[in-house]
Length: 121
Image 1 (spheres, rainbow, N blue to C red):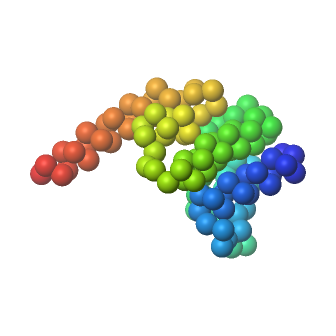
Image 2: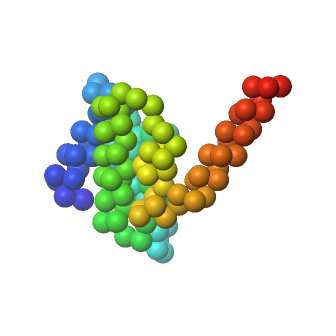
């Protein structure tokens, strides 16, 4: 990750979750093929729950680029101050090049159906 990319990611974290905290950025791999980036509040404990994570990416550079892309879109929406539409959620969290949009869309639709059924019960 370049220092400019890291600064941009940190700035987007502060826009999304607040300027009062520091954020720990980390990358993990499965020692075979896949890399994922994680964002956690920096309390000095690497086992804090993740605030955000990327989907699996084929390289560390691709994972950092995906985190940068995802948080950039999310921060833009937060600055705008309106709720995310389904299309914006799919664009933001649908993975690199929209790779996971179809499955995420199906999940969101099913979740909406179940939440609607709960409210009617």
